Length: 142
Length: 149
Image 1 (cartoon, rainbow over the protein chains, first blue to last red):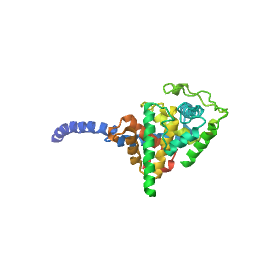
Image 2 (tube, each protein chain N blue to C red; image 1 turned 45 degrees about the vertical axis):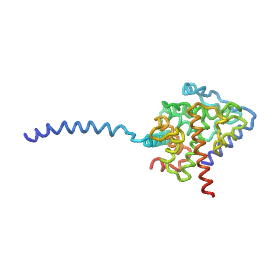
Image 3 (cartoon, one colour; image 1 turned 90 degrees about the vertical axis):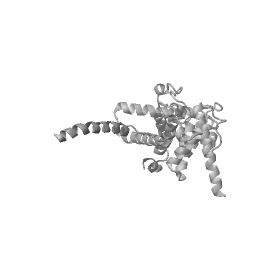
């Protein structure tokens, strides 16, 4: 009887505790921005890797989706190559190698590219990091 | 990584020599509807055949675009693949130089937003994480341990 009484008291407490802890464990709590970036890094890595691994066993619908995604990516690169000079695209035909070379070398591509606000911020970030990389190289050389 | 970039540069240089335009059966016409309107690039290109594009570059853009669906960056990788590829390559270079993955992420988000990583928007964090994750998976798989470790 005493056991039943204590069970009646403790059971709801246990149920409540479980109810409070399970969602917290199931939904990742991004304590910091870095956690979120890390999580996305891991997720996207796994997804790309999973795609390659799953390819042979995929059904036809999945295969079609995959092809569409890859075709879009391929088309975007080819489209970039197809664009003419002076239209703001860094793949611009005629100086495409120069521009990509400039991008990779850390020279500013902003004069050559005319992107949306978000992508312009990416170009600036790229330039800033390249500049820092060069400065670090110069420091280590001297 | 260098090998991929050099392959890309050689390809671009070949295209940049003028001459015939590469032809594409249908290309994305914009951010919004590209997902449904695109068909496969024609293999009968006169300039750069689709098959000549390094597989890693295609997989990178495909993976990035998929990861960024629903963010403010959706469609951007298809419109400006050069910027995304160059950034992915930069991340690989940083990992090659011994910078750890967390530092790469933090450094990029800070450079991108001008603020701290904890103040960054979710879209910017997703962008940084995707560039690193997809970049390592496709462009520099030798750094796999830095992601999955």
